[in-house]
Structures are given as C-alpha cells and as structure tokens.
Image: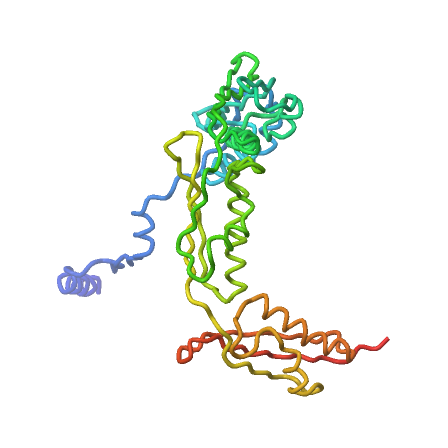
Length: 371
C-alpha cells in the first residue's frame, strides 16, 4: 500500500514538474499615476519670515507695512508683491521703490527699499520784474506748495501758469526754468523759478486764409484777438486764440457749414517783437434742409406742429442751433396743452441724391399732467 502511494506521487511529480508551484499575477499599469510620478511638482511657496523697510525718513515703517498685503507668516506670492508695489506708488510719497527677497530663517525676508520724494521747504523766484504781484500772491496761483511733496509734473504746469501771466502783460518771449536743491540729510528741497524776461511782443497782423463764404473783416470781428494799434496792445494770448477758433467754428455751423475746421499759427515777423497770426479756415460744404417728417403725434395735428417749425424748414440753412429751436417750439405746443412729459427726438441724415439734410421728428406724447 505504501509502495502504491509512492508510485502515484512520483507520477504526478514527473508529469507536472515544469509547472510553477503558484500562479504569477501580472502587475497592472496605471498611466495617470506614472505620468504624475514623472512630472515634477511645483515647490510650495516659501513663508515670509521677516519684512524690512529701508530708506524711509519721513514716512514711518508702520505706514508702509499697513499698505501691503504681504505679511509675516503668509506665503510669498509674486502677484501679491506686485500689487503691493503699485499700492505703495499710489501713496505719492516715493520717487522710487524696489522690493527684493533673501533667504532668512527657513523662509524669505522681504526687503522694501524706498526713496522718498523731498518735501518742499521754500519756493523762490528769480528774475521776475514785469509781474507786479507780490510773491505770496504768485505762490497762491501755483500748484506747487510749500510743505508738500515735490511733484515734477506740477512744476511743469506752474511754468505754464507763469508764462500765461506774462502773456497777459504782452510779454510772450520769456524763458522760464526751474531748479530744485535738495538737502539729502533732511530730504527737504528749495524750488526756484528763474525767469529771463524778453521784450514785449505785439501782433502786427492777423491774416485769414481759406474763407470764401465770408469776408476777412467778418471773421476778424468774431475774434477777441486783435492786432496792435492805438487803442489795443495787441497782446498774444494762446487761450484767447483757442476761444477765437471755436467762435469761428460756431459761426460757420450756424450758417450751414457743418464740416467747418479752423486753426491758427503764430509766425514771427522780421522784427523779433512783432507777430503775425495766420488763421486757416476750411469751410467745407454748406448744407440745406431737405425733407421734414413727423411721427408719433396723435393729440396734436401735423399741421399745427409744422406751423411751429420755423427755423429748420425745407430749403433753409441747416444748423444744430436751428434744429434745437424747432424742437423747443414743438415741445412748447405740448406743454401748453398739459403734456409736460412730452418728448421730441430728432434724427438727421444726408440724402445722397439731393445733397441736403433730411430731418425726422419722433414725438412721444405721454399723458396729460394734472394738478
């Protein structure tokens, strides 16, 4: 019996001896896990372990830190630091700001370096003789003020203010410069406005070009700028000349020239103290009123409304001023009947066939108002 069992065991050993004693399981392949393992992760942001402010003299460190969102203990983020830089510049106290970092106690130290704008201690004037106003009065006109921070754009504006004062006196040929002397220890500055006064300049002549619909004399009457003669100093004032150009444009538009353009140029005559003002006019086309249509009127007849249209009627000169007058006239009819909420909307268009301006009025009558 024992021999039989041994023979059976030997048979199975030789028959299945090449098979593995246990099954091998193929490992599964996770592609997402492999990719995530091969892709390096972004390092975590370092913590801010210290913030140091350098260069500030008048502005306290606490004031600077209070305007920053970067805090000790928070992660260091470039976008937050960039916003901090903008906020500090907006304070208006500094001419230059730099924010750097350095490793510190296992994190990052943020170093804020600022350059404070100097405070104006004194405003001085040099070379001013023809302006008779007192210095204190002149200082009141300037945008730059004592005991305030120095602002170079304001200095440029103040130079123009002084230049305008000279122009009103007829002295348009002046050289005005500014000088800033800063004490580095106290960070206080003295600002000096230096003027090299020139000779009085006068307008010798005003020449008008490009005007066909109206004479030179008609346009010159519109202008407040005049040439020098017995009863007029002929002073050159740039702001008045700008107003003169607008008066010319308004005059032309009133007479149907909607595309009018007017500009000026100041030229020096052979004599340095004499000026020539050249006024250039581009008249464009004169527009007339074409058809006039009306819609939305139920309570008041078309005939009655048309009778109120007196300025912008077919064949007349088109202008925005005349158009506004007619709208007021139509609204007046409705207001007299108790329609105080009535509205009149206009629409204008150039008719390419006739070359005239067609006008349409849309009336919204609304309800009668009662007391």
